Length: 344
Ligand SMILES: Cc1cc2nc3c(=O)[nH]c(=O)nc-3n(C[C@H](O)[C@H](O)[C@H](O)COP(=O)(O)OP(=O)(O)OC[C@H]3O[C@@H](n4cnc5c(N)ncnc54)[C@H](O)[C@@H]3O)c2cc1C
Image (cartoon, rainbow, N blue to C red):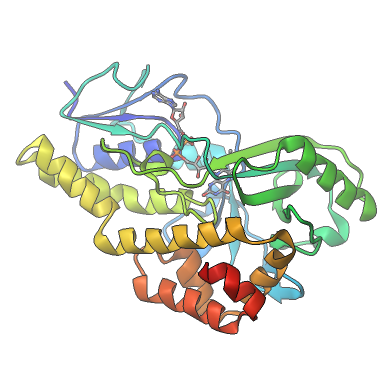
């Protein structure tokens, strides 16, 4: 019998299974069609994964820009990953890969890494990979968020170079339910036509449940609620946590499976991460309440924060002080019409 079963062969499940095997545990990775290709275009902040091999990066544009009500150059490098290379990197020959579903193979420790579920608040996006995006996404540039087209139900433009062109995505950051793909597609087409960009290319549809509850059983990745409630990102967090969670499981299993699960949970959700998660969820609720026309102004204030505070809110998963400071500083800088929403 294996010592650990990781159910789910997305990036999080693969990362954890490989780390468990490297920690000396007999590990099974269990998923329906475990070798099915990953279709999503994954992006991360390069500084979140310092150990990432170069060949896993498909594109790392030199510039990162954002637009609230005016343009900003961000002091962080964004990267788009090569899914095949990412999977190779997260594949360890010591892992036994089994085609099946959660519950079909038993072990002292079973980890649910079957992805985020839920029909609550979600992020939705409709994207096209176009040959070039002109002024919308300048060459060698990642457009992290462009809120320059205000609306009562706002969405922003995200744009990154990919292997076969430029991915432009109309994104609804957080809504319950998210704006539907046809609405987002119409907005994207409108943007592209106005910019003189031919509206043709491979499609990408995004739906990310944002406020995934923490499950009772041991879970990892999006299934464990690792998704940042206010941005939708979880990949870098899962890849970073995989070795420490695996080490906790290996150490805990020397005593008992219950010890192992407790130790892994502690690595996943130390009190500081729980506190930051609550603050991020507060941010998510504020965003959902915010009248659409105030959203660009809100992000203008966010992108004007000192870079260390922007970093803290986006990436400081256990940085209670930094997250609180970012939120307080934004509140301090906000006009009353925004403060009323943020404080209500
Ligand atoms: C188009 C798109 C773009 C995205 N871009 C980004 C991004 O740029 N950055 C980012 O951080 N996040 C992004 N996300 C969010 C993204 O889903 C997660 O970050 C990432 O995929 C989560 O990885 P995961 O392994 O936890 O879950 P998933 O990738 O969802 O993998 C879940 C796995 O579980 C398997 N599974 C499902 N049910 C069962 C079962 N019953 N038993 C066994 N296995 C099961 C599935 O087959 C799959 O292999 C994006 C999502 C989409 C849809």
